[in-house]
Length: 489
Image 1: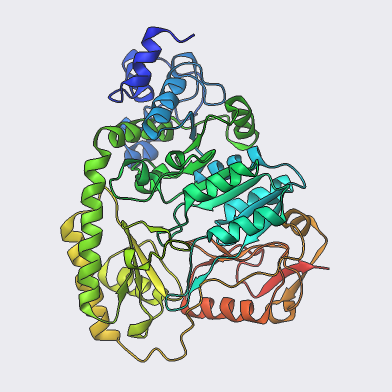
Image 2 (image 1 turned 120 degrees about the vertical axis):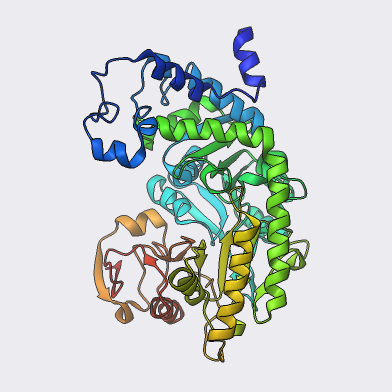
C-alpha cells in the first residue's frame, strides 16, 4: 500500500522528483569517489566550459538519494508515476536510449521467436531491428500511397481486419500514430479489432507526444485503449535528445516490461536525460494545452501562407478520408515541392546552405518543418519568405522527377534469418533479384527502403540511385558509399 506522501507526489503535477533530488544533492557538496570520472567537471575543464558547471555538476551516478533506473524505488519511481498520470497510462517508464529503445522494448515485450506481428511496412527501422533481435515474423499491411504526394498513408481498417483474419495466431498489431508526415490510422478501431482477436495493440508515437496535451489533435494511444506506446518526449515534448517514455495500459505486466527494458537499456542511466523528462513532463502537464494550441495556430497560418506562394502544396486536414487517412496532425508542416521542379531534399539543402534554416528532413518529393513549443511566429515568417524566394530563384520544369516515397516490399524470409544468414557483398546492380541481408534507408525519416529478408528489385535500385544523386542522407548498409549490398548467398 502506498503511503500518503507518495500518493500526494503522484497527484501533484507541480512536482519534479528527480530534479528536486538533484537540487538537494547539489547542495550537499558530497565528495565524489565514484563515477563519472570527470568528478563534477573538475577533471575535464574543457567539457565543463562547453556544457556549463550547472550541467556537469548533476551528471552523476546512481546512488541511494537519487534512486536507480533499473530498479526504481524512490524519486525515479515517483517521476514515472507522475508521467503515467499525466499521460493517462497505467505505467510509464523513463527511457534514456531514445525512442528506438522504447519501440524495441515494446516489441520485445509482446513478441518471442517465431511470433507473428501485424504492422505497416512504413515503420521506423527500430521496429524491424527489434524483429532481428527477437526473431518475430512481420505480417506487413502495405499502406496505400498518395500518388500526388508520393507518401505512404495509414492502415485501412479492412486491411488490418484481413491480416488478423489470415493470421489469427499473431500476438500484436503495431500502428504508427502518426506517420512522419502527420497521417493517422483509425487507432480506436484497430485497438478494438486487435483486442477482439486476443492481440495486443502497440503504438509508435515517436511523433505524437503532443497528442496527449492538444485540443483538436488526433487521439493518443492511451486514450484509444492501446496496450503500449513509445512516446518521443525529445521531439515535441521538449526534453533532451535521446530521452523518451514507454507507456503501458492496465493489461500489460509492468514488472515484465521492466525486465525487458533492462535487457538492453544502460545500467548507467543519465540523470541529465531523466531530469529533462521529469521537468518536461511537468511543463506539459501544467502548460501543454495552451502551448500546443499556439503551435497548431502557427502551423495552420504557415500552411496557408505557403500555399498562397504557389507551386508548393502544404497539405493538411483536407487529406482526411475516414480510413487510410483517418486523421491528420495539424502541427506537421509537410510541404510537397515537386511542382516547383525541385526534390524535397534539394529544397532542404538550399534552406540550410543559403538561408540558415534547418528543417527536419527532405525526401524525394516533400519537406517537413517540425513546429513545436520553441518556435516563434517571426521564424515561421522567415521560413515562408525563404520558400517564396526559392520558388522565384529556382523554379524549373519538374519533368523526370521521381515522386514515390514508398515501394511495396517482397518479403522472402524473416529479418532475423536474413540478418544472421551467410551473405556475400555484390555491386548494387548485381544485387537485383537477390535477398537483402541489411538495411537501406534515407535518414531521416529512417523508414527502410530495403530491410533484411526482402527482395532487391530494379525499382528499388532505381530509387536508391536517384535518392543518392539528389543528396539524400543514405544509411544502413555495411558499405558506407552504398555502392555494394550484402545479400544472401
